[in-house]
Image (cartoon, rainbow, N blue to C red):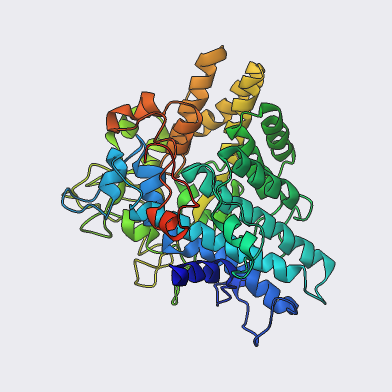
Length: 483
């Protein structure tokens, strides 16, 4: 047990400074340094290592698909009945336990990210010789990125231990704090504080060669989303108004193009994980391989559900931009296997092996993951305006999204009808982008929508704390109700 605890502290206090990818992610290694006397270049390495965590298998890959997508009414497990994906069949039916690999992976992955941030911030506070503009930018990035890791933890587990320092195994109070859970409300407040503080440091624009780094608008958008989860509608309106009125972002006309390589970091992109199909990998580990057409390009998991397909209105171009069907001829002239075992696959995760960057390794694909788009900012603004009784503005924002989808505008809605219309538009616009399950929980509709799949109110709003973590903590870490 003592050895395991030491391992946990080693993970939480490690620097994780290793090589990275293109542009700002290319930081040459330096000699051995201590956190008490880091050079500016080693600080750059530390911040870069935080970004690189996004590529890990235990962040936004297979386990994330199970927890954030397959649990929802938008997606099925996929693959074939005999291939469970470890625990993905349990995610689909809400029969998972505290021993499920998916919940362990996300706990480990996000805590790893948090530890990287805390080490980078420790180094920032001790560095000498770094210019003020760069220092501010890196500190703002760290605050935002830590908030983002806790944002994932909050939505998956509820309350979690809040660690804003580099733990020392020889300090007793550190041992307790590493395992002591905060409440869900305290966790949300903590990450909101990180997002808010990041605004004091982040620039409005990335410098040349730094595309993919977060800026002020990234933090503001995520701050608005976090405030939405506690129904602070005035704050949601204020933050999304600022983004809208900045004139910096606009919707891309072609929805299908939005998710191709050519559509990376476009006028709608507020934050996306930048990937390159290179060797060694600079990509989200097996992100497209896991979801691509089974028997043709991939494993075929996390497939769009028939329920989702039927929910699109007649004429909605987003249906063709979201659902990939057997027998279909794609934009790159590839014909989807007509005998593929599932009725739909996730087109937003498709990578062309002939028309996009591809180095012959399907596990290492150039497929950016869009984590925040301007379309979502408009939808958050619409929901806030509707909650505040500003129905005309809410409809105007909503109809911008519908116009891009080539749908007729909605008129005259108010109250619950308007709220439901906005929720419906969120579902269609953000389908297969890993938000639907959390939206249903936020809206208090888990039992209503997912009850037939096995969702139980009072239990499945959050996932279990991994049993291994509870065991290692010697019982300090407490389990969620119902597990």
